[in-house]
Structure formats: structure tokens, C-alpha cells
Image (cartoon, rainbow, N blue to C red; front, side):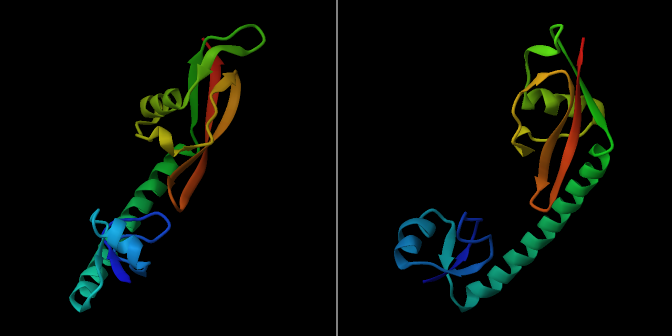
Length: 148
């Protein structure tokens, strides 16, 4: 069955795409939840408009992410933490701590879920954390944990 997606559906497609799915998947999941409508002649024009708006929004989001990346890449975010003599922290520096430090030092809002594979930092020194702001914009953020 051909359907037009009204929302992004993981493993199926993005908003505005015309896709072929099984009858049962369309009838039992996609259509009742409002994620898709059956494809017809009139709906295909609407699908093209949805794709155009999606592409414009995606381009705008990518440009904003690139601007943030260009601002954050040369910076070193400093996070003070209590540590013992060997450089081990009393506790750890979490993703929330990193996001708060970026907000305070760079004035940029970054969602903590955008940090890639971030394990809590448990030692003093310089660490690099991957950040993906957009599917096409990924960079390394330099964080320095210092004793206070």
C-alpha cells in the first residue's frame, strides 16, 4: 500500500515521503496514529509541499548547527571540580555539568542528549567530547576539568 508520511517514522521514511508499506502496517499503525495517509492523486501534491518545507527547515537547522560548531570548536570549556591529590575527582563531571558550562562560557544552548558517548569524567585534565547538533554537523568539544 502506498502512503504519504505525515511525520518522520523510524525505519520507514521522513515527512512528505511517499512510501510502499505492507497493508497491515499502514492499516494498523501508520494511519490510525496519524503518521500517514493513503496516497492518492490529490495527496501527492501535498506531499511535495511537505518535502519542500522539510528541506527548507533542514537547511536552516544545518546552518544554525554549523554556526554553533564554528563558535564552539576553538573554545576550551573549563569546568572546576573538587579533586584528590592523584587527580581523581570527588564525584564526576556529567553531561549536565558540561551543558551548563557551555551555556555559561559560550552563551550557547546545547541539549545534553546531543553529546555522543559521554561517560562521566572522573579525572582532571583535558577531555574531548563528541557533539552531534545535526545529522550532518558533528564536532569535538574540548573540556578541561580543573581543581578548585
